[in-house]
Length: 640
Ligand SMILES: [Zn+2]
Image (cartoon, rainbow, N blue to C red; front, side):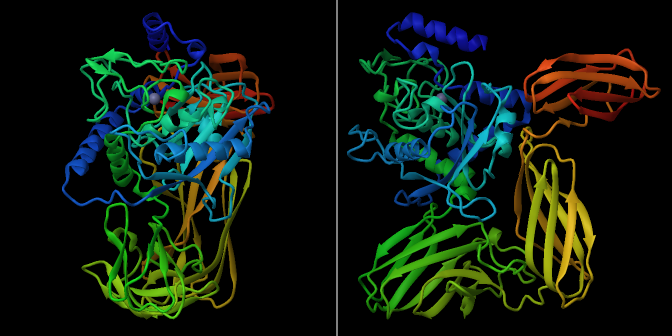
């Protein structure tokens, strides 16, 4: 924090114009990213590799579509204690509107500009309409907390564990009372999934919010810029440091231009572009993302956040029979081609692609390619030839890969076999004589028998225990079910699937069978579960994935120390849901207390303590956490 304070003082000495600005720190993203790198040194080289990948993409001659609109599904987590912090749905919606005005440079709105380098980024945001388990949702989660404020480093993992949706499917936006006057911070692409997203001070979120002069929603516009890989216009350094964007003028340091003048200083021989969303100006001065920033953001979306592209809706007006109508993804690669032999009354066709996800209406346990399409036509009596494209990475679990793929159509009730001819080298299936639209998906009808027909896979959560239940209609030569779990670890970039347990099946059955599995004493955080359905011959397929949040407030937790065994130091982490006295003691194998690490009142939160067994001999020790009625003891091993 010393560095921040110093920067603020220097800034205010140089530019003593501003009034209310000094109570706020515009952005803590730079400090937050430095913290992540300090925590996980390998992140630094990982980010460097990513920068090289991004540059290679930007410099490649491959055609890229600038026409396609990238739509990003957003979930807003409102973390609140006071009624003021519990911001209204209208305020949330006003923020989404501001984002679209700013990123799309919408005419007639504050996001419009007529600057020569001002760009419509063709990136849009919409509140999620379904939750991670496919259920209808408003896209707004509200979590009440007893916390008066959240620190952007100390409370980062705790805050985000209170509510989180998978960051490969959603942009997570958290609003809360950030401490230290910080307006917001973001995580660049490449950090741990469980903390990926953007945090905004509740009073700076939305349009006409209380945090004047940061009251027009531009804090979120700025932070999402970071989240899509943009740096500050001064590159977080002096004149010699660039922001990696060609068409933003060089400038020398953070600068708070006040709305009363929106004054443009000359720095590094250039007039500073204080209107840029990646500067620190008051909200009312901002209205520019440049062409260069658009290129970098779109490249980052394509290269690092591709899984998050929910759909790329493209609507075309159809007026010529015999012409190919191409629908392309954000790489400008065809995802569908349609050629009409006759148009009938059809005058337009809208095509949406859902990449890297199974069709939600497919019967559970049915094999399908992880991609589907939604065709919505305006008119009838047409006849078309349709090519549907897929990626190899989306074809999972078929014995013959994509060699025998066929197309199925969902008519609102049932899946109907359509057929088609696959071109496995070209990664598409051609279907002719199409005279009805709907949802299209791929499968291999010959890849049977389906060993297990799952009719449901559900869960219930009680405190930090999860109970999974699944029902099968039929089983053929089935060995059993491996229950797989993935914990989104806030301090690990690469979360992996692991086996939580195995449940033997009845091998062959034509009757309904019910199975259950309990996974208990989980640490708070976010989990995914899936079933690996294993046949007697060893082949396997996966169920759909269930997403579960174990929320912190109701749960005490004492983690296993790390490393363990240790010599001589180890870290003990724990979580306190209610304010109170906390004691942490170390005992030897005979039950004699060898250390009192802590005996003090603590606020709810996640804490860790380093313990050194320097003056102890090798052997088994115990550490005990006591707070209120909670008492837990864990074992650890000192090996010298
Ligand atoms: Zn920033």
